Image (cartoon, rainbow, N blue to C red):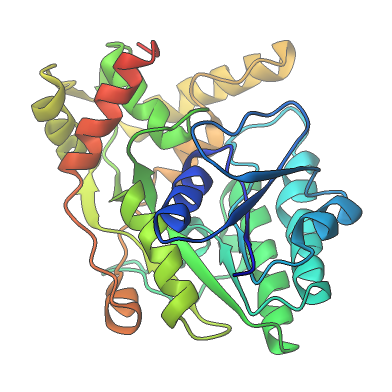
Length: 324
């Protein structure tokens, strides 16, 4: 069996995708930057960088399938151009390498942030959305990366797009913005919340969805990999139940959060340190990101579970690994 290439295996979703492939009997090769650590996985490691086409082609050579999971997932960066170099230019390099190695199938990991959200109801894969609707550089860069992928699909590359929502679970090394919400809760550093909502999903279901997309997805199509639409208040209630800690009780108006984020992000620009409350994150929170994953259920056989088990694993993993 030809190996499967996974980019992003040093991160949260990519690590789980690689582990799921190993459990399915695949040989797994990962592209990892020099000095980065691939933990707890028996994989072949090729050192390189998404922004260096030659190293990506070297990693992809001889691979039968390619999972492009890696992304620069930050809601604030001192130099926003870095997000576009990794997320757009890096994606273009991975697609070129997949063509060069004649991959049988490519699975590209986008984000629910590139999905349109209607004024009423749930967003889905066909909801109209434009670049100007994207809030912040992370969403814009992922939207533009999807444009690159769809162009490759139109040109004949066998590529499927998956759009995970807000994944939670164990092995969130960095951690992700969603993981930081859980960490702030566990550290008692979240005394209040705003009225917003997200679709949350077990990261193991997201990884399983990647494999289902490989096996059953249609070329050029996108599939939302999510589970439960919850307000932030509901999410904290569920997190409270598994952690034994009380949820924050005070809900603050959006304008208060926006003003705090302005100050926090302004200070970050002066110091170069990531803001405690990124302005883009607060701007995103103005709209509830509620979506439907019915297309993935119908076409892929995707069956996500409730998130309580993932929350429990996240809490136990963060606590046992000294994050809080």
